[in-house]
Length: 142
Image (cartoon, rainbow, N blue to C red; front, side, top):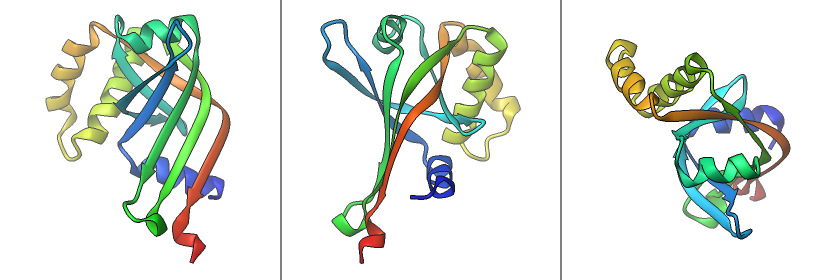
């Protein structure tokens, strides 16, 4: 995919598979809702989650966003990078609102904000700085 195709693909999706590295070196893989902050993947999580503990030790991440059921429909973007932690409450809330808007389209901010503010008290946010991007679109193989 071109850079524009990658950006459009990431903008249209809502979920990603996030891999971090456990203490013993094994991958910790979870599904996350995410947003885009200036084209970069952004997500939030509880500060005491396994992924947050892993990222405190090792900020390397792999993010997979994919779609398609049949082989000739498969498309995906694999982002390798480093997750930078955001501790500033306003920035954490911004990421929370970004994620909430994408997961509940059409719901007004005034209805989302109380949820984000309440759950955000125990959350931290991250922005992924890309080091490598791999993409594919099997629809173009035909």
